[in-house]
Length: 198
Ligand code: IMP
Ligand code: MG
Image (tube, rainbow, N blue to C red):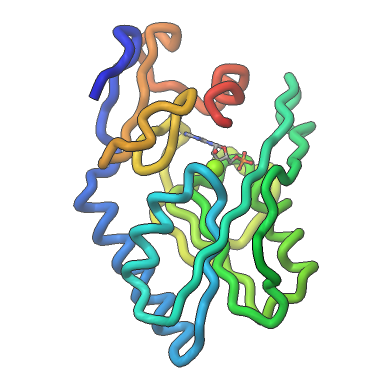
């Protein structure tokens, strides 16, 4: 696919590895909720490809809904404030909800969204997250269905973007930019990543 001259991509997780892991997670969810139905809630836009694949590995009655959040970036990371920009279409009261997210970084976004959904009294609320940069965590959060723990690199593909690009890559790749001196982009480069995020 077309990419800027300044950026190079290196595969971190191949499509085959992702597919195997997503299948395992789908089987676990199907076992855990046997005989029941689940509502998969995807966080737009990054989680849409993970949700699409995960849902097809779940052998239960399943429905979809979506949320979108925006975070205010400031020079101070811990000051990150999250705001809901698209709410669910349906009530989740009494339902088995699985909140599906692409990547957990500081944890601020998912903690906020999980707290919000919990207040609406679902029967169960579980978190399914494809990637976890655990080193970066500011807010403790329990993930029920985790794909992979990854090092602190900026990654794209399989739904994840860099300034809205690369979401349609089949593999998950590390972006190396000329600005980062040819080294993988670090999530610690906060300004750059805040821009890349939404
Ligand atoms: P958190 O609130 O710091 O956990 O941020 C999570 C959000 O930041 C994710 O939903 C992504 O939108 C974005 N994000 C964090 N790290 C990356 C990355 O490496 N690539 C692409 N997006 C990222
Ligand atoms: Mg996201």
